[in-house]
Length: 102
Image (cartoon, rainbow, N blue to C red; front, side, top):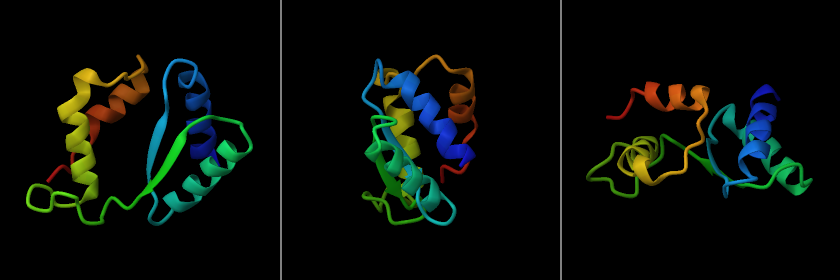
């Protein structure tokens, strides 16, 4: 519940200015977070699109990326300048520390 509550609080701040799309690694423990966030959307506690993703599944471009997780991280890296990333130091630190790209 801690993670879903934290994400919900962030979403409430951001949904005032942004369309919020949340991609969650849905395999393993992430499944519960996905389910809870979808429930909060249904209850109108937050407004967002919740996508359950399996980071270990096949990438769309299998010749270029090892798996879905690396493909999504590279998409962020390639589009970072056009994304509306909030000035949130915790979020920025998390985006800068992911290392398993290959």
